[in-house]
Length: 60
Image (cartoon, rainbow, N blue to C red):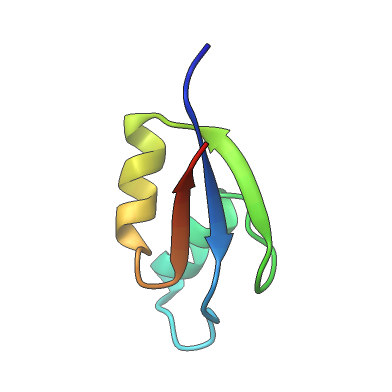
């Protein structure tokens, strides 16, 4: 079984660039304080790296 990570949107996307908004949406985050649990893959880690200033990541 793959490791999972919990990603939480902790800052608003109001001032974010359109690319960053798309990354947040692609991660499945809808609004502030919304969390998703996803598999810990290099693709997900890369997406999180693009918006690391907007989210918090927690290992599960």
